[in-house]
Amino acid sequence: MERVYDTADAKSQGASTSASASTSTYETAQVCLLAGKIILENGGETHRVEDTMTRVATAFGLPNSHSYVTPTVIIFSIDGPEQITRLIRISDRSTNLMRVSEVNAVSRRISQGELTVAEAYALLEQIERTDSGYAKRVRILTAALLSACFLIMFGGVWADFIPALAAGGAGYACSIYLHRVVPIKFFAEFLSALVIGAIAILAIKLGLGQDLDTIIVGSVMPLVPGLLITNAVRDLMAGHFVSGLSKGAEALLTAFAIGAGVAFVLSFYEGSALL
Image (cartoon, rainbow, N blue to C red; front, side, top):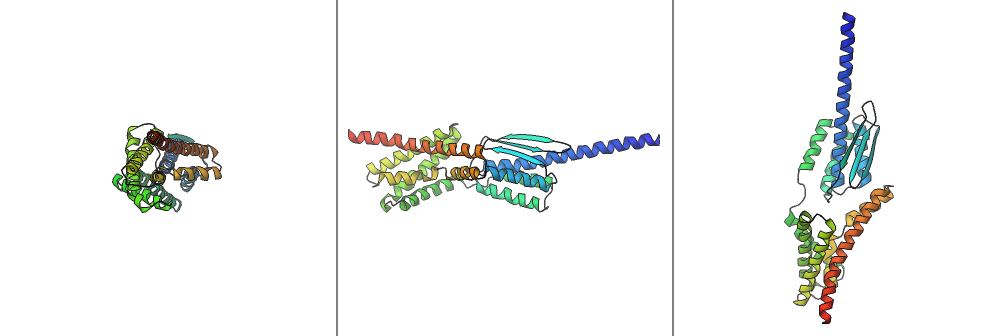
């Protein structure tokens, strides 16, 4: 009878150990996926997402991990006694490099052995919930000031400073609010560029501005997808051709939408000038 009980206890302990290992592997996968999700949604590069997830898994004692990341999906797998494969769909992407920096800080603390799995997951959840971005009015005012400064940088005159300030701020404000209303991202950018062109033309007609082209060029600069283009080039250089080409195509379509919006307004302005 003692042997029977000993065998039963051994089986029970083995099952408990297996369940514990499975839970630990699952929790580690959750931490890796959440870290990658935050980075990808806030403007991080594809290779940065994969590198962060691999480092986190290795730091928690799971070196045999594999990841496949595109701008719209993350697939993460861990090999071992309890193999786990998870997928996360990325539907919304923006630019918030502060969150990317905070996730990198958590990742470094994990690599140094300062955090447990539960502590790391709690910190990442806090980063995801916390609105670390600037207020909308601050972003709009900054975009307006940037537009006016770009005007001067591109050789514009100080007389066009105020029109560029107004056009750039109004266009960026339209971009922020239209992205919430219009489900098609490129249509929102088209309308924002259209507003910029309309305000610039109105300023010229009222005698408040002098050079229409410079006002428009300076005002659309906050809408230009500079970070997207940079990430596309970096992903291509790192060998992530699918992500690099898709981000490059998105940047190209964004630039086309901005140009089409401005061209649409200018065509009416030039047509009315000929009449």
